[in-house]
Amino acid sequence: MNHLRYSGLPFEAQRVAFLDIVSADPLVRDALARARALALPDWLVVSGALYNSVWNHLTGKPSGYGIKDVDLFYFDDSDLSYEAEDTVIHRAAKHFEALSVPVEVRNQARVHLWYPQKFGQDCPRYASASESVGYFASKTHAVGVRYGADGQLELVAPFGLDDIFSFRIVPNRVLDNQRTHEAKGRRAREYWPEISIVPW
Image 1 (spheres, helix red, strand yellow):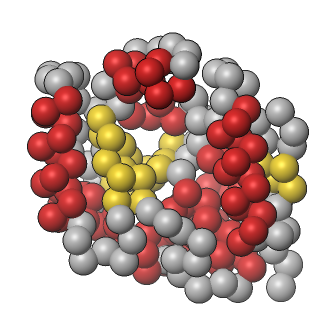
Image 2 (cartoon, helix red, strand yellow):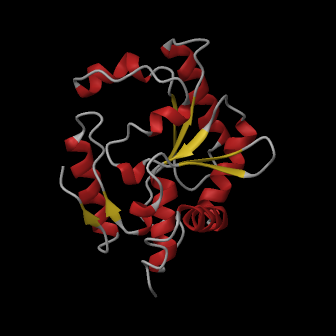
Image 3 (cartoon, one colour):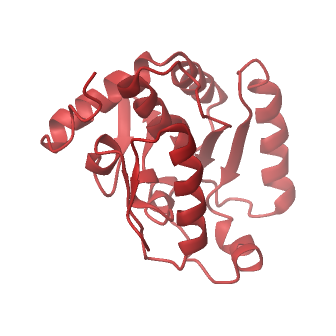
């Protein structure tokens, strides 16, 4: 099994392969269907459940292997209170309770309010769920998928997909996230030893 068979291909070929793989994965397919039914504003399933599912597919591992949760972003700047987000989180917990892993739901319109306290530095005030994906600690992880109005899967991948298909975790130095980049890289290598980690 050649786990690098999509590495270095043109973006469009990688986009088709990526969406084919994640839409066929039982965990991701279920999460996306439930996310669509929840109908949060500007929603996006992002990061680990997606690229981990691709790595599982390409290395012959089962669906859900190495995946601890599903990250679901949404963007709603009509109410930036903690209480409004907490209400959504509780509604989502009930909605996703049949899923095999927990779902982490976060309003990306609020990140700039709590980020400095948690990470000791400022982050920009995002204008959409898609924009926030470009600030992940590793470019490899910056990927999101959702259903568009036409029922087709839409891909958000500000740095492309070649790092995912090359099993390469690459730092994104837009914020000082070295610790996160290194921690996520170490964890990933425990599950997928094929991975290489580009140092910060």
